[in-house]
Length: 308
Ligand code: NAP
Figure 1 (cartoon, helix red, strand yellow):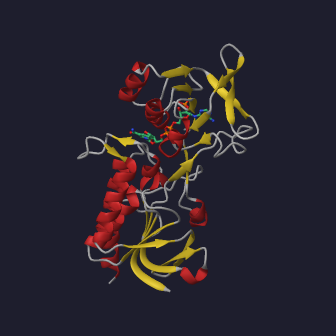
Figure 2: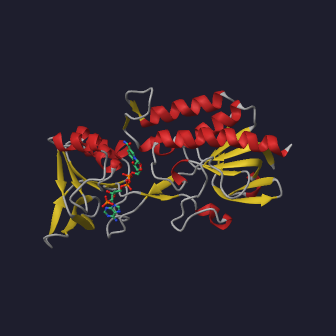
Figure 3: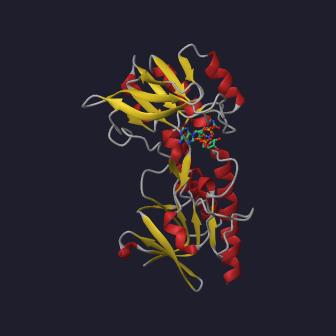
C-alpha cells in the first residue's frame, strides 16, 4: 500500500489549497479525485469575487491552483474513494480497487457537493439533450435559442447572466417572488434586456419531442395557473447536496450529510479534517474553501508533528 503523510480527498479549490499547504510543510501529499481537478470551478463561468483576479474564468483559476500544488510536489491520484478506515494512528483511504488503497497519517476531506436534482418527470430523460447543470459546458449549444434557468440563488443568477451572453433569451423560473442571489447579481440580471423572470412558479415537468427539450410545464403557486414555458435548454441550479456518502459510517456528519468540524477544520476523529463545501457552514464560496484548505493543511502538519 502506498504511504503518504497526508491524503487529500477531492481536488477542488479547498483540496488543492490543503495539498499545497501540506506539501509546503515538507509532508508527502497525495490528492485524490474521481474526475478532473478543479471541482465546481470547472462549471463556473466568470469569477469576480476571488481577490487578486478582477475577473477570471473558473476553469482557468482551477488550472492555476492545480499547477501551484503540483509544483510543490503534490501527487495527483485518480480514483473513487469509498471510505476511510481508522487503524490506530493509521488512516486508510479505501479506493474502489482495494489494491489502490492509500495509507496516511492525516486525511483531509474536500469532496464538495453535487447539483441537487429537481426530481420532476423529464429531467433524467432529457439530461444531456437539453437539461443541463452547467452553463459553461452547454450554453453554446443554445446559441440564438431561448433557454430557462431554474432557481433563484447565486448560481442561477450568475450562470443566467452568462447564458444571456450566448443565447437569445433567458427565463429564470423561481419558486418565490424574490431572489436569494447577492444584490449585485440581482441588479445586473434585472437590468439585462435578455433576462425574464417567472415568479412564484415551480416546474412540474420538462417536456420535449423524441430527441430534445422543447419547454417546461410550470405551476404558479399564487394564481394556480399552469402553463408551458418554451425553451430549448433547461439549466437547473437549485442548490447542492454534500458528497459525504463514503464517510457516513464515521459518524462525522449532521442529519443532512454535511461534515461537522471545529474552526480548525478538525472532525471528531483525530487526524481527519474536512474542508470546503462538504462542511457544515454558511458561506460556500471558492474563497471560503481556500481558507478551509489552508487551515486544514497547516493543522494536519501540526497533528503529524505531535505523533512523533
Ligand atoms: P442555493 O444558494 O442553495 O440556492 C438554491 C436556489 O434554488 C434557491 O433560490 C432555492 O429557492 C431554489 N430551490 C431549491 N430547491 C428547489 C426546488 N426543489 N425547486 C425549485 N427551486 C428550488 O444554491 P446555489 O445558488 O447553487 O449556491 C450554492 C452556494 O454557492 C451558495 O452558498 C452560494 O452563495 C455559492 N455561490 C456563490 C457564487 C458567487 O459568489 N458568485 C456563485 C455561485 C454559487 P429559495 O430561494 O426559495 O430557497
